Image (cartoon, rainbow, N blue to C red):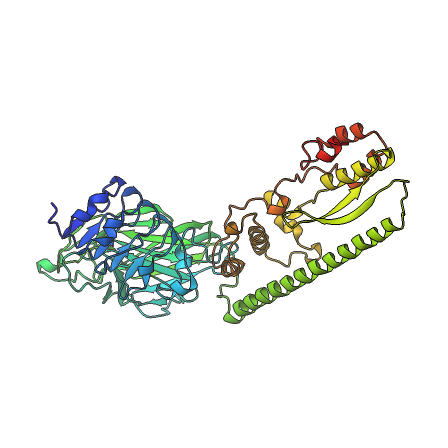
Length: 547
């Protein structure tokens, strides 16, 4: 067994984790464990096998990070549709490497790393985050495997003639649609992933799994047309015409056609072409069309490696009245937005520093004036008191107030001051409305309906992320800009802001007027009335207990 060179266990409902001793199979060159139920982390030994060159682990439940080291011989890696997270390993820059990371994974991609990967990966990661919300498109057309064309039906079919390998993906520059291919044709040293001679002159082929995505779509019901043309089995009287290509069709993760056979659907008519229409509900701004070979049909007629999914063209049109422009965002608009955000953040930072400096100077001046007043013995309550500045061991500056033990009026006043500081709280409207999913109420009513509700929610969520208590939970500025542009999804796990961690929005009883009126009573009465209302003062202040 350990002398195996090719091991394919695809689509066998295998469970459990990958054994750590997998590295003992020293002669293994190709390993396919895709479309199973394997969980756990990827063993380091698997990526360091000296002979392994093709590795397919897609469509499992693997978690954790990619191994940090890899043998130079391993050049084709598919880990799509797993639950992998973290940062990318240093070996992603290796020349001729094919790495498919699309689907449920979520990697933090640095700007310096993005140049090693095909562009658009951020659009194909977890939940397909690009242009979410209202969406910007309402149709798309793809001439699979061929150049751009506009036939008599008037639909523009964009070109899809990028070279795809056994573990690759491609996203258009407009981020309107994308394609992902996985699988290696067994026994074919020069595999072709496109084929010619058909109704649309070309077809996109795959050895195992072929996915097309419509991205940034306005939500609603869509009409999907899939065009198929069999290009390998030509009409002849020889055995070479007896091959069968059978695969399954999934749309939005649901099986819509099992054991699809173009020749059978065409009824033996040549050229063998078929159009299949479907209606699809889009609720999260994307469409996923998945063609999957489950191992049925022939493999070697007319030549070795003639099997797997094949499709000629795809089109999607709305079954509703669209409300979006159907145009990609212009570079000028994106640049202006980035510059505007950057300048705004810079100006806000400068104003914040100036504001802090001004408040500090004003407080310093106010404290000096109070000291001067004390020196002149100005005391409205005939109370001997004095305010001085002091510095604690940890560097904090404090104001010291000295009271006379014989002055009850001064004592009550001081208690009221402490209670005021303890009870005053800030109503965080933004956080409260975010919790209630009413963020749009923060918008100036004068704007009427001239704003995008999804953009408002996105801005509020980004602002709350930027005010997290721990700096490690706050996103870097590059991700802030990406979230504001809608290029990546906003993290929904937002905790209460650090400056508001212990307050209660619904507690409106501890106001300045309440405190002022309650001071006229006794000290014990005052605290029995406010101690249960103020979430920041669960017990009586230590200063009061000492008086």
